[in-house]
Amino acid sequence: MRRLPVVALACALALPGAARAQSDAAPVPAGVAVIDQSRLITDTSLGRALEQRFQAASRALIAENREIEAALEAEERALTAQRGSLEPDEFRRLAADFDTRVEGIRDAQEAKSRGLTRQRDEERQRIVEQALPILARLMQERGAMVLIDRGSVVLSRDAADITDEAIERLDARTPADAAPAEGEASPSSGAAPPQGADDPPPPAGEAPLPPPASP
Figure 1 (tube, rainbow, N blue to C red):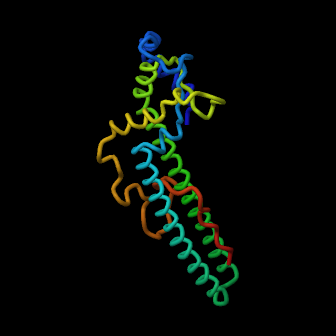
Figure 2: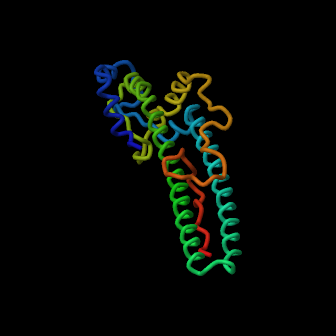
């Protein structure tokens, strides 16, 4: 995610009148405003809805991984049980095919997990972009020429922080139906092993499908 010093420049350039607004009343004499970019995302209704969708999709993918893992373990046991009735070369071929398929499934599930995390990061960035006009207006009202992220600040007055007001204004512009429907944005269900890496997103946190030991 881009840091707000860059966003601040965009805000300032978007409002040519920002420099003149200092005479309106700027509680921060230095013309600097502070924003907690993390809270701007997590504490808004848009951010909470996004996190709800992400957690639902993560739980669904974890459940899918467990189903696939159970199916693969059952298949491995069945293959091992056939070992005594198969020619050694035939058994090795079947075992190699099984291992190759497990590797492909694991790669596909890991791709889902990366995709889900990437999707969340992109949607968080869009929340920041939606907040830009609000941040620009707040800068103009306070006569601020610079907006910096709180994480980059060593010390500041509380009056410099515009986070709460930015959250309030962004929420006021958020449609009432912005919250996701139950189960929205979850990955494809079912225990069928995935065939490719382009499937919908997944969770960060739980290791996807360790390959079963070769029979």
